[in-house]
Amino acid sequence: MGIIERIKEIEAEMARTQKNKATEYHLGQLKAKIAKLRTQLLEPPKGSSAGGDGFEVTKFGHGRVALIGFPSVGKSTLLTMLTGTHSEAASYEFTTLTCIPGIIHYNDTKIQLLDLPGIIEGASEGKGRGRQVIAVAKSSDLVLMVLDASKSEGHRQILTRELESVGLRLNKRPPQIYFKKKKTGGISFNSTLPLTHVDEKLCYQILHEYKIHNAEVLFREDATVDDLIDVIEGNRKYIKCVYVYNKIDVIGIDDVDKLARRPNSVVISCNLKLNLDRLLSKMWEEMGLVRVYTKPQGQQPDFSDPVVLSADRGGCTVEDFCNHIHRNLIKDVKYVLVWGTSARHYPQHCGLGHVLQDEDVVQIVKKKEKEEGGRGRFKSHSTAPARISDRQKKAPLKT
Ligand SMILES: Nc1nc2c(ncn2[C@@H]2O[C@H](COP(=O)(O)OP(=O)(O)OP(=O)(O)O)[C@@H](O)[C@H]2O)c(=O)[nH]1
Ligand SMILES: [K+]
Ligand SMILES: [Mg+2]
Image (cartoon, rainbow, N blue to C red; front, side, top):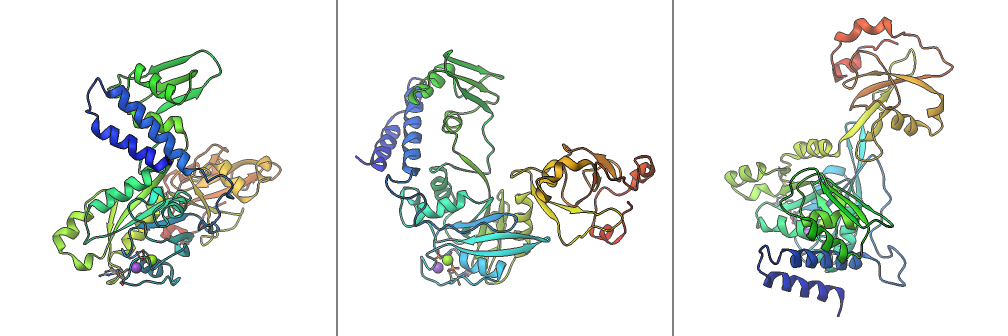
């Protein structure tokens, strides 16, 4: 029997089993069995070279965004509108057969946008090009789930399920469960709060299913069995997702209003060029990019050429900033001067651990160099506005 058939069989057994206290342990075990099989499903078949006929596209720019959706929802039309790169669009399904990259220029940053073939229910099990598409989604920093506003709301759930079954978690943070395998000592199970979904026995059973007999488990939130399995599997990918309802030109205003109020959702029309600005600003917000401008001593910063950092990827500390400029820079840095929202006064003397924020300005003071402006001299500037706005960018910064 193939892996997919075995998953189907266990799913059928779960559907047959009544949910109550007595069956709770058994159901938990079945969930773990399915999770293990799904992980097997993701491993490339023996003998095949990793990747192979995937849609590998070289990463480019400061972040990667993938367009995921059913066929003919308007993904290619959207790519063409936002990036200027032409991607064939047509009224028939599966017009796009591969991965087509474009670049969005926004806020002085470059964001790679990927158009992909449409996926269908069963994609995670290999239907259509689902597996390759999902692999690209996993390599992205943000997923734009493109939906046809005139079609069933069920599409959003089906797609979410497809992505979940291959280990993608949309708009979720990792469960607050500490888990560490040990060599000896048995299983230690603890929690910092009362648990309502998982008890010690259930946890033991799940670990047993994974043949783990020595481990430390600490629940820091009232997590579920699924959360515990995610932590044990350890290969989940937590990605932000914006739901993009396209084609609002063909539905009534009341329906548009309802969709627009859904969480993490943006309504657009490619045909009428409606709300594309809002989509871009939402995308930017969700990516959490942090632009930092370098200010050479005695000169104005170049506001058109930021160093771009990210809290989720690589971090936003002064150290991350320095490493971004040059990997050997860090050993020469004495401290830095910071202007912007992360600074308490202007400029603030900061160490390597200081966390920078979007649009901060940084001047690096090296160990041998002598800075122009001393700490005391700038205390009087503490009333300066908390953000380097466009207006301020035009005004000179001292030091
Ligand atoms: N009414 C309306 N039609 C649109 C809109 N955007 C795209 N379309 C149409 O929807 C159809 C499908 O568009 P595509 O861009 O090819 O869709 P896709 O999601 O890339 O499709 P596949 O590559 O086949 O998965 C085309 O006929 C487009 O003209 C829109 O905002 N409103
Ligand atoms: K199409
Ligand atoms: Mg397309």
